[in-house]
Image (tube, rainbow over the protein chains, first blue to last red):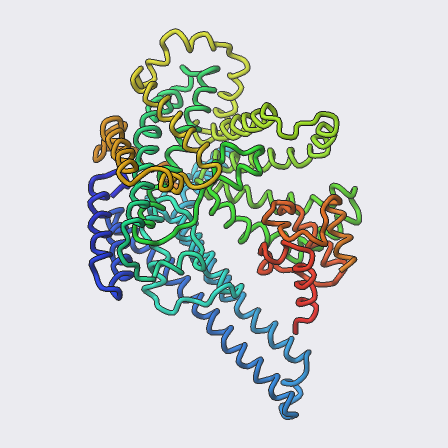
Length: 541
Length: 76
């Protein structure tokens, strides 16, 4: 049941209607039931995986919380014993309490480690087993060994990377005492499996999502209207832009030998547009559906293509994934005991600049490697992740040079310089995404190289563009759609577009606009609703 | 507190740390700066700011950070 199927639209309409009709007590259980029905349609076997991750992380969270409560109670008891002058030597004194606290924390850390290892193990087995076998076979082949390991037939359950990360984040947050564990198993199961987020995120935090997820919301026309508007906008991006440009991208990357040089640049630009419209469109649908139910979900994008550099881009693209990696991988590695020791050593023995940065670079390397492999079990994604790391590292190292440049040339408020920075970000990010497009890493490098060695820009004007699987009308629709996307982004720079519409345009006018947009989707959507519209790209991650 | 301000000044000399209250939210300190800071704090004050304390509220101002250091020093 894809977001782009009639079945899904019918499912959402029914669920939203039932949600507002049912009594308060039945609202969140309905969402849980709906989420599992949705997941059932993705393949009944998938249910075992999500149920497994849910049970493991639920138990881990509960045990950590239980330990924390009993440890706190005992700690207070030890303090009281000291005050009253009773208690054994093991129980009284600051040192005794410190030892006790540390021992209990260690216990909780072990529970957390076991919980997240088991949850990640499920992800690792289904996502990376065949990749590992592929690499082992590669090594066997390199050594001319006659044996090969057979690949396993494991289908990747939909959204497993997203809900596993969400559940792992929950366990770590319980350990860090950001919130208590959820005692009600079914409520917790809803947090992990809330259906709009299952396809491609965002990766929510329990502390944020739980506030409204279990609250029974009464019907409010305004809430429904705003959610619906966001959903329509998401479908517009997905069906009118992303799916319409998809055939051209596929034509060029499926026959790389025929589309070198300027066409690789075209792949860069077309794929950037496709991925942006596809992913942000999908997130708009997710957030819009949740909004229709009165549940706010974290934003995942903040106009990333207006970023001045790659580091900023990553703060504005797939925000919930970026903050997840920062909070749960980057920081723990950076401030871990061995890393602090390395930091001390490097600051004492290396030149000041390098001494300070070496530990951060090491932690960043791990983060980007993990980010790459999280996106997909292939070397393409690993190299893509490390490519991002290299670019960010280079830009950090070039900072003194930039500072010198800015001292000599005043670029403050310069639109030209800002445009240059934005253009540079778009080009670098789009170039790195070529790893997402071509078959393997060597081919990607080769194709990238042809942009500089094969000078065939003149052929772009000889009608070839009309033989990429999309026709003249498609280009016109794409151009108009992209202009609309750009204009909406520009308006959105100073606040929510829907807020502005609400203030300036009367109800009838707003609905005339969104009805027109809906008509555009029905008429110009690449395949039309209900047909075999393409899956969301992030669905496969 | 003065020692902490000196460490912060070393990272960004042009910031007024006595008054600034949005060091993280205002994107003055990035993750690179925060890690350098944690490492220097470990050296100077003998406290480990573990990952659970890595939230913007603890790093948004020199005062908040100083309070965190004191809390970690006093922690039993």
